[in-house]
Length: 449
Image (cartoon, rainbow, N blue to C red; front, top):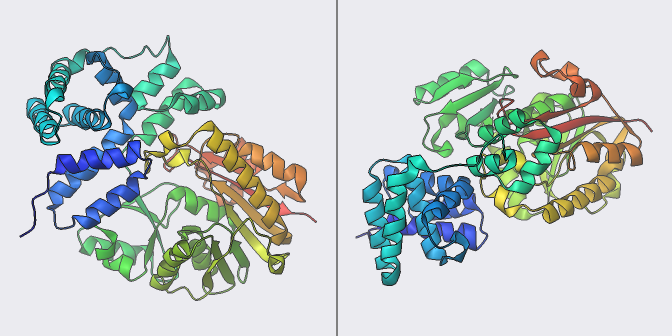
């Protein structure tokens, strides 16, 4: 007989792993849901929602707790602070607040915190009664503090964004990052038409919607897990954000092109290039570890690509055999990931200014290593999944200052809705909440000699 699982106890343990031990939210969730796959679908959904919601809203939750607690959150015992955080998230978003308080007190007692069960009960019941009366920072008087608490965004990130964009745009970015994640797919047009993919998806009761910017992209919802979707198993589509698809559009592969993707895993852009080449040319998808290569190999085999290979190569190590070989080089480089906070909410807490500086140094080391792989007249696409000038526009300028490239307009490869002063110049910063995509940057360079 399977031992019953206390889902709330499991959630606190997961939050401790994520917040206190620095483990990645999506990995902790994946591992726990795999271990307890026998749980009811409702229980699994509850675990996912509370863990992700608590992490995503942690700054606001801590602000609320400290309005009603005599003890600062950072001074609490790890189990107690994560128990309170989990419970406050539930009080904010779910019914029966006093039942949630009772469950938290029981759990505190169950874990041996008898002396603190009164504290837990008092704080949570006060929050349940007074949640609607919490006074938040004033947007007019302290705009950065308001954004930080309202959207649980670290102050240093907001400081950088507000230096680039005005307050309404930054608030739209924060709001966009807080929206529920959506699943976008790219139809593999060399395997099946968009209409065929849509028909197969709907046969399984999956909802399908068109998306802006690209006619072969779709948004899907109402599925349980991808491996059970027939069209996915048959390799008729690839999960890929719209922003990533737009970067490949900007690459504009031609029949027979030789393409190198230097940091390719999980391989969405490489597969897209391969699909657009329609069986011609060659795509070499490179990444650092055997694990990442195996992920790409799985996708490669599932989609039955014949003009692509997944190989293990370190992008920081010079490969003399690649010099002057690539018609197209994709450099989607390791970055701070601030554009995909909506999908990985713990990124915003793990990233720091010091780590960002280290990433910028790595980005430039990789560009310094791989630029010569582009043949004269060939194309280099530089991209990141982040927001901010340091990793994007500043790196564009640095590359132009040091190597024989020029920017090329990307307007011919984008729908008119996305045309702007920067796309005419050769680059685009996509912003969640402003555009229908993740936060993403890409630029198109032509090698000139």
